Length: 237
Length: 237
DNA sequence: GAATTATGGTAACATAAATCACCTAAACAA
DNA sequence: TTGTTTAGGTGATTTATGTTACCATAATTC
Image (cartoon, rainbow over all chains, first blue to last red; front, top):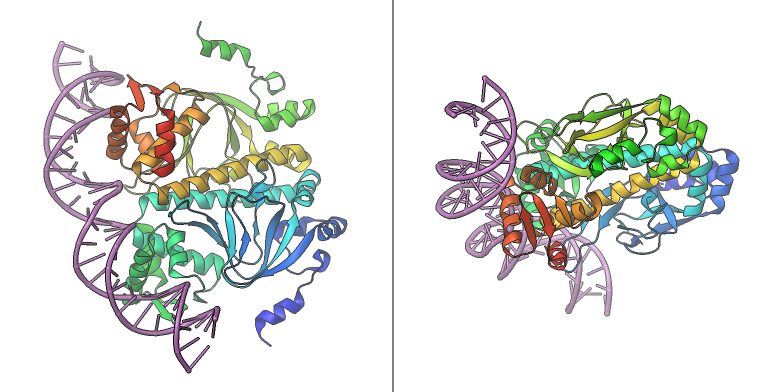
């Protein structure tokens, strides 16, 4: 039995005894958790399946329990998609649909097979209204998302290809896969859409990194060999 | 006496009777407003003065009462700044420093002479903890900011100069100055930093718009003559 | 197992946009 | 006033990056 299936056994369908709760849900009382449990469903998506579709009615927020998903803006007629971010277990997506606009202004798709809890939007609204600690956590989360977007805007206008791709690989290693050696489950075009470049450019730059001995790619198993060099490129790029 | 000075007379130094309150502050009780009033100062900044500095301790959130300010990320060693957004009266900046990081991750500067209320961060934290309606409004505000950043990320990667500048002018007219004819108080380089292009490119594209009769610029007084054309360019850019 | 599609890859070429050099006029300070 | 700085502007040149075409291999589907 591998690590993944072991994790599955340890988690529970009921929020009350779930071991994978997100930061903000840890701030809830037992009765609040029981209530939240009634307004949620747990669904497993296969790789590449669409979890939320830009423009569709947003009736729920999404909590990532297992796997890896991408949040992206769909490009109109022949334009590239833009990947906003990748989310791994413990993260919540879709807070932007809580108030105001009732539709998703982005899409979400599974990059790896993923299990999510879809939580009714009204449950979350009630929690915000009645639990200040919960609200605070959500505001913090949204602020962090904001700051990250600002960084992305900066990088996109001030760094060129090497710098952006180096930054993306570091981000994936540190924040998403949380290890310097990881199975690269994103395609080159995912990587390109994440860093605002063409797929060809992503391939080219990635191969430069390999040739320079900064990165090793063994059949999709990535390992950052020279993290200092990568950070240097990310800064000056 | 002009319109501006008339407005000044109508506003008050005390939050309780202030006519310019932001959406979320309208949700507060009289006692909450009185309390907020004790933790705020009102300051007037001259054009080009720095209101908040990236990296400095963030002890307050900023409410724009009068004027126009820009929020921007400072570029390191020789890199361009990136203007995240412009804010006109009624807007709040600096929510991202409420929880987590205690420093500003952006700078704010006055584009026109501007009056702001600086509100103590602890006051706002308390309000979030105790007033669900207030929290909801803040979350909505942060979500909108997020969505706008996503749009910017999309535009930067998928649209070229014309499209981005057309979009920026439309945004300024609709959301910032709230009229099709306005005194253009931003410089060409502000415009460039807002749309992620060089100053030279901003000048060139702007002059193209003038030559095509889409836009009239009489000594800095801008008027959008052909809004349909501008919207078309912004879409297909 | 064969056929098909998706993904990764190389190289030549085209082009959008930055940079550079240089100029004018306005705003500001001495 | 006069010098000095700042903002706006034009055209030539360079460069980063996208595009196209074409191929190989891995992964699906029939």
